[in-house]
Length: 167
Image 1 (cartoon, rainbow, N blue to C red):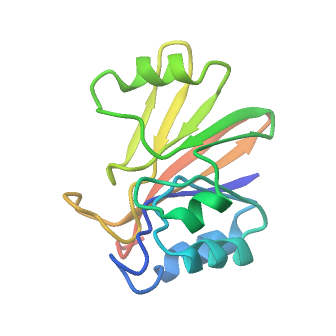
Image 2: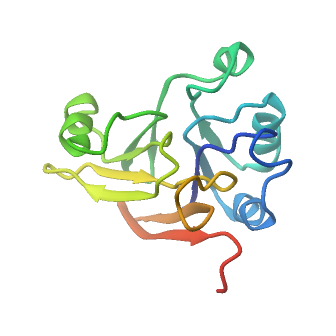
Image 3: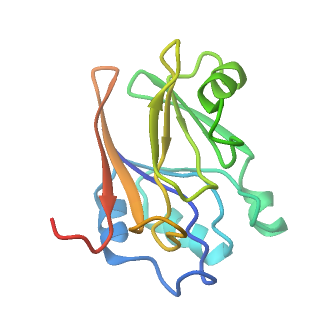
């Protein structure tokens, strides 16, 4: 099962359109996970139209229309792994412990908000993934998103993609 992980698209405030590399990855994915801050309802509609399956949550910059269509926390079983998705997890210091306590029984937590890519594993095995942002890199050197594979109940080939970087 091919996964595409993204967050913090901030359309149309940070970009007028989604990068082609991201859209190509959306089209190839079996499941797209978006960890919030869509900002524009049209962005949600675009992902919903192009995704084979979309799992998303609202973020702190998402208004009432998006909050009416999306949960604050989403959970899904994908290929034998228990996923949770949330926008914000608080400060980096202590994140693994806090998230392991907040999301017991979860194998993978996808989050956003900071625009800073993150890939760690908490004691107890919870994998924490933040794909960064494909449109607003803030203090990061690149715009980013992630892909991963779920095979045989395991998360494999987690890859951070730098948009516009040479392959």
